[in-house]
Figure 1 (cartoon, helix red, strand yellow):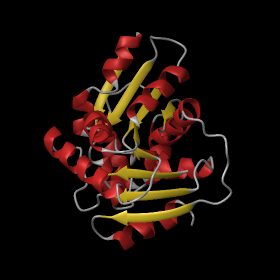
Figure 2 (tube, rainbow, N blue to C red):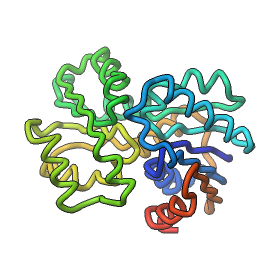
Figure 3 (cartoon, helix red, strand yellow):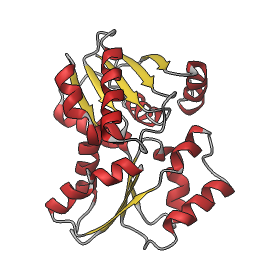
Figure 4 (cartoon, one colour):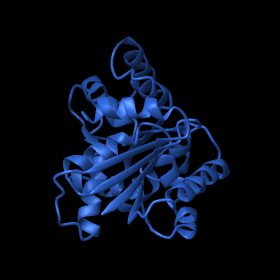
Length: 247
C-alpha cells in the first residue's frame, strides 16, 4: 500500500507519526504546502484551489489513497478533490467526529473544538456533533498556534501566553478536539493547561481508527519508505520530520 499525505505545512507529520506507529503502509509520500501556510486565514475558493493543485501533484505517484491531513482542506474541499482525482481521498474531520462520539459517555459532556479560523467558521465539527445530540460545545479559533508549531515553539512562555489568551474564560472540557494537525505537537502543553483532565482527540489516532474500520488493512509493514516534498524549503521540512518522527 502506498499513500499520500497532504497538509498545509509541517503539521500533517503528526498524522504520519500515527501511521508509522501502526505500520499500516509500505510507502508514504508527504507533501506540505509550506510556501502558503497557514490555510486557515484564507477563503474557501483559495483553499479549494490549493487543494486541487495538491491533487495534481499526487497524480505523479501511483498512490492507493490520499489522506488530507489539513482540517481546513477537509472541511472545505474534499468533494472537489474527489471529483478531480483518480484515487480515494480521506479527510480528518469525519474520523475526528467519530472518535469524539466514541470517547464520550454523555451528550451533556463539555466539548472544546480548537482549529483555524476557517475550520471553526465551517462548523464542520460542531454541526455534526450537535446533530448527534451533544449540547455543550465551545468552538474556538486558535490560529496563533499554527505559526508557533511551524517555528518549533512547542512549549515555553510564548505558547503559555497564547493559551492564556484563548482559554482563560473556558471551563475545563471533557474532550478537546485538536482540529488542526499542528495541534497534537502542542497537545501536552494544552492538556497540562487544563490540569490533565481532558481527553484529547488527535487527528492522527482518529484517522488510524477510521482506516482500520473502513478499509481492509490487515498487513503490518515492518519498514515504511518515506518521501517528503514541500512547496518551499523542502530541506527544512525534512529536518523537522527527522526530529518529530525520530528518523
